Structures are given as structure tokens and as C-alpha cells.
Image (cartoon, rainbow, N blue to C red; front, side, top):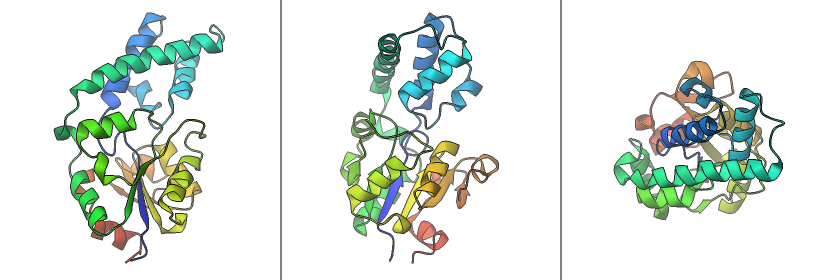
Length: 222
């Protein structure tokens, strides 16, 4: 078996925290007079916190209104609300098929790595009781955000894996682009009409279809 590591995005792949992100961003944006809806929230998928805030401020034509310190305060306000909402997470919120795939990877000694823009990944994995299945969690601090490939390259390095022997799993266009730029096999979760044009090698509508054997066959790594 050639596969050395599988790198996972978190939101939208391991579990659905997008609803909590949306609630927290909507509350913060509303306080400063900016309305965002669920369609706009789709544009924030896979994007790190400060970039998301910038998009919201541009959307509300307030990009010049705040100093850097004030922007950091707004982002922190959003994150505090988001973290409070995460208290609702339980192992039952793990997407179908994910725990079984992680168990397969562990049995085969293939490293599982979290490559997410979320700085709350350790907290989320602990709430889902999945933290013991992961070789490492890439710290997104100081790492260029997706679609830059850096977070996936760093994850491969932490696992001691060559990018060409890695599979990345993502649900966002930015994430798929990052995986491909990193030189990895890209698995999309969601709508192939959206993810295929971004470069996904294969797209599954649900994580329920993710098995190690299926991934190995698709990526020709058997």
C-alpha cells in the first residue's frame, strides 16, 4: 500500500460546525449593521477567521471603518460565541462513516491529520471523542490560508509523508484547490458540479461512502 497519510478538513468533513459558524458570524455582523444570509455564508467555507471577517466587512461596505485592533476584537467576539455553541457537540454529531474510516486508517498505520483553518480543532475533536485517531492537527496560526497549499504540505510533513502518497478530503472549493496545488489526490464531499471544476479527482455526495478500500482504489494506491 502506497498511501502514507490522509488529511482531513474539519468543518463539513468530520462534522457540521458550519451552522455554528453562521450563527456566530450573523450575530457579530448584525451588531455592526451588516446582514449576511446562508448563501453568503457558503463563501466563508474553508476560509480562516480574519479573511472571513474581511469578506463580511467588504460585503457591508465597511472595510475601511475599523483598525486592525478593532478587527481582531470583532473576530474574537465571533469566536467566543462560536466556542460557546460548540458545547452542544456530541459524538453523535460526527458525520456518517468518518469514525469507521479513522479506525481503518489506525489499523493500517496510515496517519490521519487534520488540516483545517479552524483554531478550535482540538476542542471539536475532543467533543466528538475522535482526538485519539489523529496523528496530528496542523496549527493554522501563521500558515497561509486555503487555497494556498501550505496547511496540507505542513500536515504531510508532520506525518512524515510525501504529498504524492497523500489523500486530502475537503468540502470547499478553496480546500480542493489547496490539495491539488500541494500535489495530493483530492477527494471532495458535496456537489460535484461545484467541486469538480476546482480540481477534485473524485466527489462523493456523503462521507458515508468513504472507506479505505474505496479511497485506495480511486487514487490507485493499492
